[in-house]
Amino acid sequence: MGWWQISTDTLAASRFVVSPLAETVATMKALERGTAAHPGERAWLDAHLPAYRARLAADPITALLIRAALGATWNADFLTPTPSHDGEASFEEEVAAVGAVDAGTAREHLTVSLGGPVPPELDRPDLPARTADHLQWVWTHVVLPSWPRRRRIIEADIVARTAQLGRDGWAGALDDLRPGMRWLGGSRLQVNTHDYPPHDLGGAQLMFVPVTPRHGWTSWDESQRRFAAVYPCSGALAGAHIAAPEALGRLLGPARAGVLVLLDDPKSTTQLVALTGQALGSVGRHLRVLLDARLVGRRRTGRSVLYYRTETGEALVAAQRDG
Image (cartoon, rainbow, N blue to C red; front, side):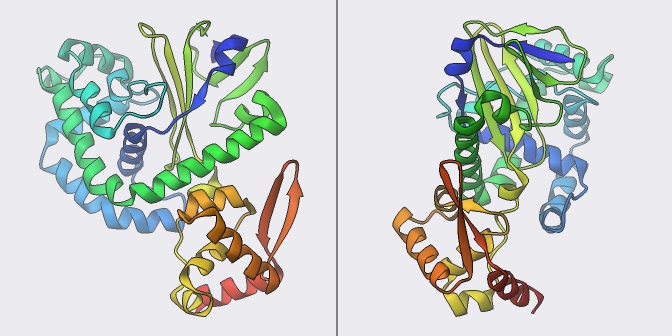
């Protein structure tokens, strides 16, 4: 198994960061897989997969390159550069690092991701530029139109993880971060189940990077001592983009109906603010009205107050969805 030795100082200075490039790579992975994990993802694939496949069909070299870069069990390192520690880089800044990789280095990375020789068709100098161009297309046509919503979901996940960290410590916050990751004790974090040499992260920068698709990976830059674990947002948040039924919006008002629909799973006020993009005062007023109407209830969990739909609220939402 692959594991990292993490000093107390490194763990204390670690950060949750937002990476537009990581979101784009994870989205590309979902498109490459082409199978849906739930009905919402099926609708999303139906909307975007035809254009994605048409693009690759028209450019077989790039299609072969992307399949090789994703590999069987390991991404080519140049495809997934480690984000900056401040998490403030734009997509354009991040993707520029992909395009700037030396072609020889890219082929070396492809050898690792493929577990063997690189196809002769990929013995060419434009591999990094082609990869960056393809990522730019995915960002522009698939991710960017929904980026504000995606970012709210990512930020809500960071809020939830930070709260969990305060309640349960690092062991509790990291154990379910992504498949194969768990806290082993003794300052050791298992990051995957692959048989790779351990890394000592003493004095390094460590980042945790949420993405909305159900894909994750690890990356590192030994020269700059930066390490990252990319992980999927929790299922309760990743599915939080479902729109409120139109009739329910007419009944309660669109914003208030949106809050009610988001409570498929209990959520805190802070999470609802992040997911809806509404101000804290507005979310609070909506919750008070919904509480007074007995459509939602609340309970305290540790330091957090979580809101949930009551049986009446569930029946109202179900009736509108069924209708």
